Length: 199
Image 1 (cartoon, helix red, strand yellow):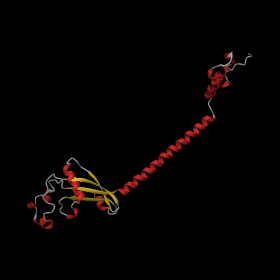
Image 2 (image 1 turned 90 degrees about the horizontal axis):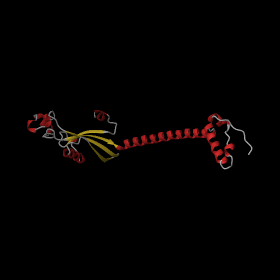
Image 3 (image 1 turned 180 degrees about the horizontal axis):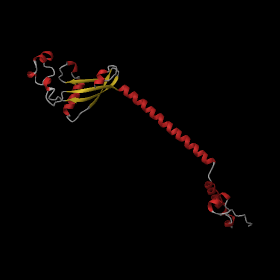
Image 4 (image 1 turned 60 degrees about the vertical axis):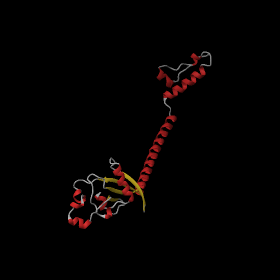
């Protein structure tokens, strides 16, 4: 939070607001008061996100409730027990708080335009990387497929020859004598090509 207050060049903004602050500049606005009342109605909530329209576009506000502790009651407790110099400086502003009650909130405001721009850039980089990977994969697989089709293996050639031989020879008498193995299949099946016999 201290870094947000120190760097005035950024569009991020941090503020501590209250329903009854000592400094009137920290008094909650209408929508901030509604957020604080929401924290009061829902004690289990520890964070709330609100969007509003700003001069530079939509702004996202992240709020967290503020509960006063015993240390806070020294300046924000009963006005009757406050030092005279404190009353003279602030009056009764910011006093009368109840221990453990939701009296304000911490607010961090972030313009959504920058976040949306960064999200779009990241998304396009992701799309470009995905298309590149699939493109390279397609080229590699296509090249491998073309190489396999141009130079078929011996097993593929033998399988094709066997299919043609059975399809042709089974249609004629004496097909068992006509079936001959090529030399590439003889070594694979342990047989030798036989000479053609006269019908």
